[in-house]
Length: 68
Image (tube, rainbow, N blue to C red):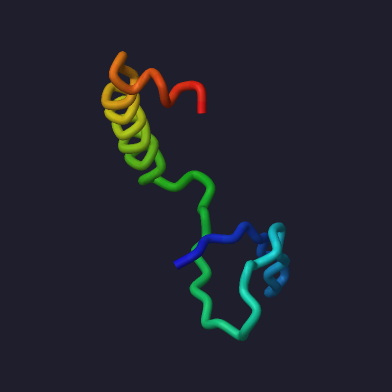
């Protein structure tokens, strides 16, 4: 599955990024809703994941990778 930014208006989808596919493909359109009641849950999970990754990678043993 691949996500590509687009806008939907008046029944049409306009690509904001060129889809990197050469052949016809089936697509699933997912609408990012404003004022989505679950948005705070998603942000909470993203923050938790970010903190966990930072804790896992921000250490002296992996300092060599900081310069890459």
